[in-house]
Length: 124
Image (cartoon, rainbow, N blue to C red):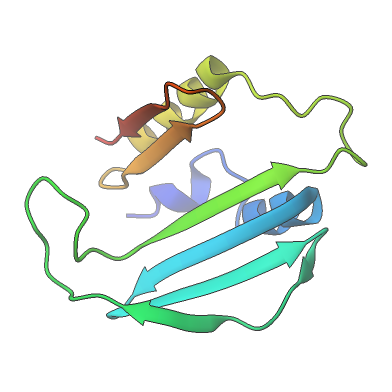
């Protein structure tokens, strides 16, 4: 039950650190039938958390429709990092470890840098 707390993460500061070191970061949260969004630029909120829509809470087998979850999209700051190109294989390996350590969590890794978008779903 408590594996999440000790799964090799940053113990609750992960998103805060990513936000502080990003040129921009966007959050999209689906919870309790509501869709919330918030965006940040260089670690500062562009505005308050806002409700941008709703969804019907129902689990459809084989899809994510009707499920709660969070989507985090960001771009690292070139003011902080000299190299902002990610190695997809390294990210996939680390996220696979996290998916394994956090049973029931589904992580979707998408690489949209090229014409052929690569998408991997990681869950155990």
